[in-house]
Image 1 (cartoon, rainbow, N blue to C red):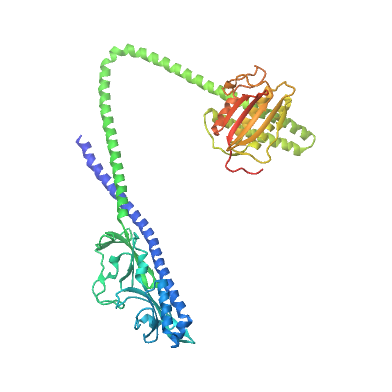
Image 2 (cartoon, one colour; image 1 turned 90 degrees about the vertical axis):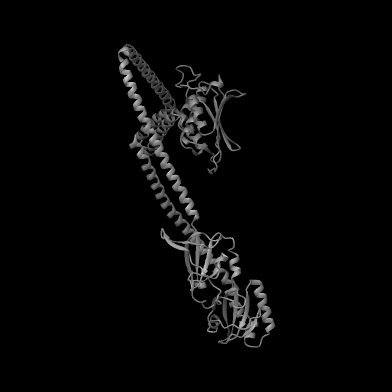
Length: 574
């Protein structure tokens, strides 16, 4: 007992280790999924920033080619007109300010009251290149990107157009975005961010303000703790309610804007998912262990009970020996009776199968015999092509007989094979081919005008041919010996259903309510080989396709059987 109880804490410990292993695996997988999605979001954020700045770069280049600005750069244009142009352009594009700067930093015209520009990126414009920079405005304290485009005049660069863009326009599109993204420069200073808490923070502690930043404008931004998990850098932050407490740190350089895009992906979803999976694994392991323990205890209790019962039975064996012998004889007789019932059931099933096969294969066998005789005659006449055609028909009939046997077996077992789109016109033509000899022998006239195009229904080709052959054969039997016997076949559409009708002018149906009962037949003994299974089998086939079959007596005399099937979704032209 004590040994069994000691297994419980050992199993609990093993379940806890399993849960921890599942947690580690799930956490690593979730981190990978979050990192992949974060990388894609980081690329989109960088493309958004570069796309926004590209508009202003093109604005600077276009303004540098404007005639009025070129004239002002040469000292001949109207300063007020150029400043009005700059002001309109800034209002339309949202630029912070636009200026025309001469060598040395003197401002020739500006949309605002800027006095001079002496930044290095402006000097780059006077060298014939496009200047770009980002910095904090010393006067206004605003962060801005700037482009400087050279104004070319007969091989000289008398001035440069400077367009400055406030970072607020870019950051406004990120407000409320769940992704924490920011862009840092070479000095590890966060210049643009989707969270205001990160703006103008530097990831390295101490030191003075780098170039482009006013003294005292920066604050330190150092992760509380960093570690590597599953190949990803994890930051523990203490940055306020709008920053994740723990996040995956991702980085991707964007040389076009001279910044590095970085993102902080919250690991809380990975923790929750991994914890959920580990909890499920632990619960399953504990539950399975509890079930196994209960089964073992139950088996042990059962073994003890059986041992007690065996001991009691041994004591009573002498008194119940006679009764046991009588019960043994009764059980032997019961087993013999049961075996006889099983054998009778087998014989009944074999009888039904044999009757069905005999009924359904009679016409194809007659056709095969006829084709074989014809093939022999054609060979005697040295007409191998026509003999080959008859042999091909025999092969096709044999293949169809095999498929009919398969379908009869499936019907007897209440199986349902897959259905598809079937051409009902082709089914009728094939059935007429199989029953041609029988119809001709009965002297029956056939009224059948096939539609101009295929009529597609849902069903199985061989099984629908079987139904059509049964209906035609029954109609021919009903018209046997009648000089003016006529069989009419029609196909009509009624909404989403297709109706096939087979009618004759024979004596009609004696008991319409029983025509689909197995082994029900009105044919005289010896008159036909019918076993009363054809319509019963047809009923099961049609209903397996989701259709309906019915028989009635016509007012003008004779019987009519109709088969309704679902129309195929797409009908193929003939």
